[in-house]
View (spheres, rainbow, N blue to C red):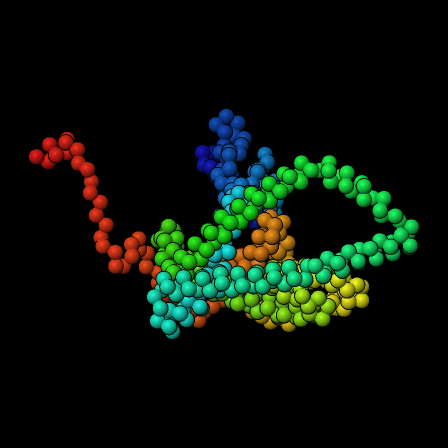
Length: 450
């Protein structure tokens, strides 16, 4: 080989001129060109023609910090954990913002949620009146709502009369029980509770301003309750009268590509709410009848109020019936003593066992498809965020979200519904005349046309 010819150093293990094999590895994958010097003929190496990817690094992977040798110094697991972390924080911040907004608008949100559940429960009644008795839709909706109000008023009135009739006897029994308790404590622990009466009286006098402020706050709460009741009744009527029109307007606010999927998911969510409402009414009825019949043997004058209280409280799954059953036990304790209270507690526990092992797994599990652990956690989280209202609506909300999210991810819990029901997005009623809006024209526009 002459001096003016350039030699290429062989790679891939080919033998060199002196018979030695070329080096392998990362250095051997670089092809160097040797050019003889014009003065002394010594060979020197030029810059590599192509560099290989350093070991341990992924070609073209963004987001990794590289050191001086070009090797990624942050492991893949750390990068993935960081990417998940900021997304989780962003989702948590969005949920916290939504929760704060709902808490601020609780006076409006809670009545609307109550109206939605009432409309779901009254829809079979409205359909019966409309399709079987041939009533107009508006009349059927109004009669359904009026019937609900009449039943609720009758229950409250009857329970109030029972409480008023049995209050005198109960108060006398409560005073006698309290005196018996104080005498027992005086004999066993040598405590004279009468010495604390003066302290209690002075403390009540000192807290008089706070008591008045609390009474004013109760008045404000009563006013909000009245406003919420009116909103709930108003929304219930229109949810019964024109549910599809309201849903069509809401879906029409979404992008066109998402409307059909949201509509189909909403249909399945309504089926879940209907199943939850029917099942919860059945479970609450069983709890109310069982505990109410048990209280008949001890406080017959208060059996109906206790049953109504248990029925209302049982709409908070697993927790409401326990609390109301404890109240019933305390009433029996005050009225009849320890033995009757222990028997009443056994009746409450028996009813709770029937609910927990028979009704909840078979009925509520099939209705909402939620594990009992999920139900307990949902009730706890709802009560922590929004108090009694949060505990009341936590389970139906979680069940609704479970059905909707599963459908949007490809799992249909109600395939028998199909996708044939298409929602027409319209802004006017079908029989409404075309809307003509006269536009005022300026003098300049008239001059330009002329």
